[in-house]
Length: 135
Image (cartoon, rainbow, N blue to C red; front, side, top):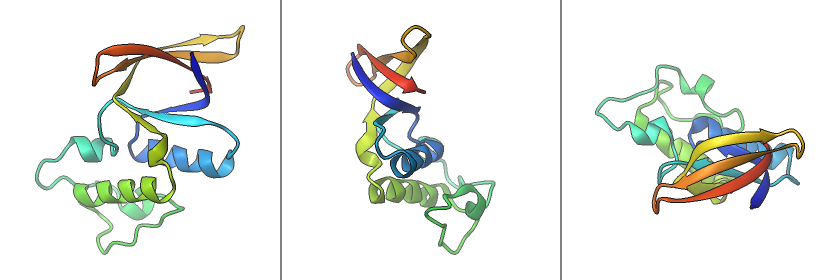
């Protein structure tokens, strides 16, 4: 079974932010971001109806390490999705994302001090297990 130090579930705004902090604050730790769908972006990729926008200003919702510089602080969905994608690409986080990895279960072993995740690969219906110390 493959093992990484940290697993982040979801490649949305928060998952990409977690990847940045892991890369910069814990550079010796291995990590993977598991995304059940085929694209990063979470809500901002999933929901694409006309007029979708954030209810929070992006100066608050956005990343402190990549300040929001667009004119509109209350941003539309496509702008937020671009921002998330740019961030993932600029900081090498996109390379850590494993797409089509849906977490079915997570079991903690006190004896081994690790998590074991059961993953369904939505693009092939195959299953696998992945271990980590921090989930």
